[in-house]
Length: 77
Length: 142
Image (cartoon, rainbow over all chains, first blue to last red):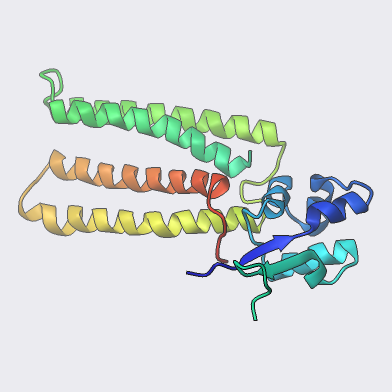
């Protein structure tokens, strides 16, 4: 059973981007506010294309926004 | 709440009680419900109630979401596709029983009601999976 989890820094990056709302981020990447909330809470893993779009909005690399960690906290090798 | 989830909840509220009453009547088969026209009227009445609740829900969702599409983004589509995929197998299983097994040992209204039960079960499962997809499922494969 895989124990890896996908976490993200979207909430922090929204705050650093002038407290951008979930709705505004959703509008810019083509998602609904509910889906942005689900991604932030780890209830939904976005497609690769959407992950790149989100990273692009914040001017970051995809690995700075999303992290894939194993159950023991280390990055899966 | 996402429009698709709202609509799925309305569909459940309209469908489950209505068809529960329908099947209870069909199993009990009271004396006022013995001829085919009477049974057809019973089915039409239940279907009418279901349709009325569903259409009311659709109108309310459309008004509340102000034009937002039911399948607005990839998550909506993934949740709906997963629900459809799983419910399809239940529908197929039910219709195989109804169409390939029951004709050899049953007939008439038993087959009709079994087909209705298969369809209602599949639709109920589909709506439950949509609600669960928005509320609980941690991840969805694309």
